Each structure stands twice: as structure tokens, then as C-alpha cells.
Image 1 (cartoon, rainbow, N blue to C red):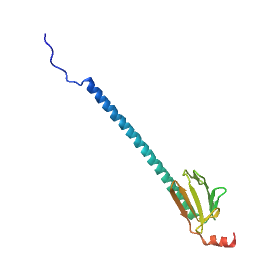
Image 2 (cartoon, helix red, strand yellow; image 1 turned 90 degrees about the vertical axis):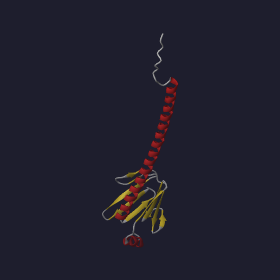
Image 3 (cartoon, helix red, strand yellow; image 1 turned 180 degrees about the vertical axis):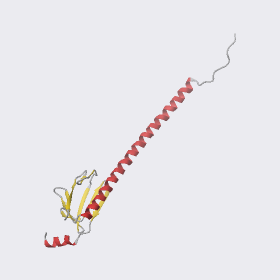
Image 4 (cartoon, helix red, strand yellow; image 1 turned 30 degrees about the horizontal axis):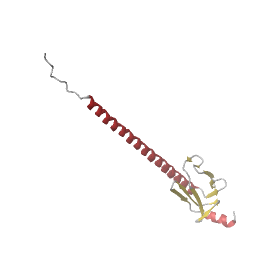
Length: 156
């Protein structure tokens, strides 16, 4: 009786189990790293969105502060009124959003300060304002026209 000595070269069951175990560990680590990367990208996207909103708000406030001659802050209603001889505009200021006529800025507001002639005011006419939003400061101001001082002097 003759025994066939030609063996087929193949992996043993133990070698296959070790390969599957190592592969599953590597794939598990890859998924956990992918999850961490996705979280980081989500955080970066949120910071970018907040920065873009703050920059857009700053730009709009600069435009409006220089377009309108009279700016008044009403602390009771939390409204900012801007007006000139051609018309006016209003902003609604709240803790989590800043609303103008056409835009809403979802920016958490930590504090707001209003100034007139380099003095902080509670209500009334202003020529500068500082908003603190998540550690970012938005400061806008305007140059006062001569009629602003004449109106104050005349009590108007």
C-alpha cells in the first residue's frame, strides 16, 4: 500500500484564527480612530460656523453704523434703532441670537456694552457698541456728525 506523500501547502486552522484576530483588532482600531477624526472635524466645523457668523455680524454692523446718522439703544425692549433722513432699521438683541430685518445671527451673547462719547450708557443715543460672544469681541463705532452734538445741546 502506497501513502500519498504530496501534501497541499495551506495554512492551519490556528494560523487562520490568529490572522482573523489581528485583522479584527486592526479594523476596530481604524473605526475608533475614524470616529475621533469625525468628532474633531465636527468641532472644527462648529468653530468655523461661529467665527463666520461673528464676522458676518461685525461686517453688517459696520455697514449700518456708518450708513445711519442716529443710533439709539433701548435697554427695556433690547432693541437697537438706526435711522437717518431716508429711513431706519431695527435690531433685536437677545441672549442666543441677534435679529435684524433680514438676517438672524445665532451667536450666544455673553455681554453687550453701549457707548456714547467714550462713556458707557444704559439707554439712549450711542456711537459705539461692544458685544462679547463666546470669548470673541465685536466692537463697532461711528464718527458722530455735527448735528448729533447740536441736537444734544438744543435738547432735541
